[in-house]
Image 1 (tube, rainbow, N blue to C red):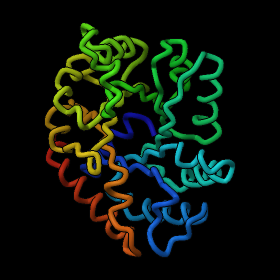
Image 2: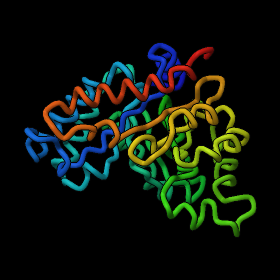
Image 3: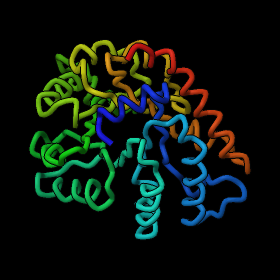
Length: 269
């Protein structure tokens, strides 16, 4: 899926919802085996329950990598389960010297055929450029994150302007909104208007809605652009909404609720 197709899907579903498949084997619901087969079963049920409302799915690769080779198989099989009309995101936060980044890009864009990957920009252009070279693939660069450690560098008062603004400004010159997006934490909604001044056209992937306390309404009010320009991610708030056998049904209800919260901001796109 490319950006134009993503915009069409947002218009069709009237939703900015991205479901995070950050599946923790220790948190699988009652009745689901606590093994890799159980993870695959759980992911399948979640996808089937939420696909009517989700325009994207984000898989945090660490939850699969920690299981070794079997975890990688689950990652690949889950990617294959995703409908063709959603954006598939590998939340891998890769970033290294150029030849290493090229191998990371090949792994996720070619071998596993993800549409997009999250990337850390700390090492600069030559670490991000290999991802940007892949045709019809999307690189999602960390911009402003929600974690406590963001205070160390991103918003540290020693930097004028704040470092995250420099990152957004510089990285936005490396490519276009067709293959470049940015991560902005939902708990940083108060900064979204300033961010939109810097990157008015690019899509923003917004994690942190739901369990982390971010507000989808505030994100839409401050971050929406002429094309929508938002992917609002919820992981734990949807996939772990129930620890019982009704987990898929409850996940669907939560996905519907979040999609409907953003629906008023999908009009006139």
